[in-house]
Amino acid sequence: MTAPSDPVTRTASAVVPAVPAAFRDAVRPPVVAPPGAGGDLDHDAVPAGSVTLVDTLDPAVVEAARRHGRPVVVNLGERPELAAAAVAAGADGLWLDAPGAAAAAQAREAATRVAPLVRSAVPDTVLACRAAIDAVDAALATLLEHRVALAGRVQRLKPVGGHAGRDPHREAAIVAAMAERAPSLPPESLARIVTAIIEAGLDAAERDDSDDPPVWRL
Image (cartoon, rainbow, N blue to C red; front, side, top):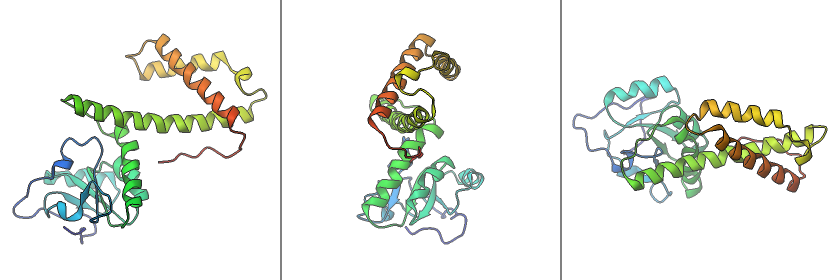
């Protein structure tokens, strides 16, 4: 199968072939790459008409393409850096023309980090549950890394930084805000989590004396 020639979508063929298994109940959108490029699927493993290919990151177009009843695959061309935006737009798969394993790995990692934030998962097996948990953990790790960077920045801006500059009122406000978004966890449990995160961030800030600005990386 080749990438779509139509600027927006490629419509269904007369006889719709079976959807490749990699698209069914996937925790994250699979990466479809050239043969030997390290994708989850090779281009020729996706029969024409088994998916709907779109050449846009517009969520409205992605949603409209679902009328065909097939997985919607966003064509990234040779730009794996667009993978996160494609997943956020609702892509069920990522079509990549860039050769080499590095591009496929970049697209896969971005999809892994973003997918749990925008896709709901209802796994019905232990293995599927564990895969979904692993995906959430990947997103959590990314958020924690960025939080640590922001916390380190705060320490350099405060009159008194480090553990000595901790603000109990601010920490209580953080717990209260988190409690609204995580009602299944009692406040005392969230308080322990927040304390551990803050202390780990302060320890990291003490080890890192660079003044690099926080950068959100996907």
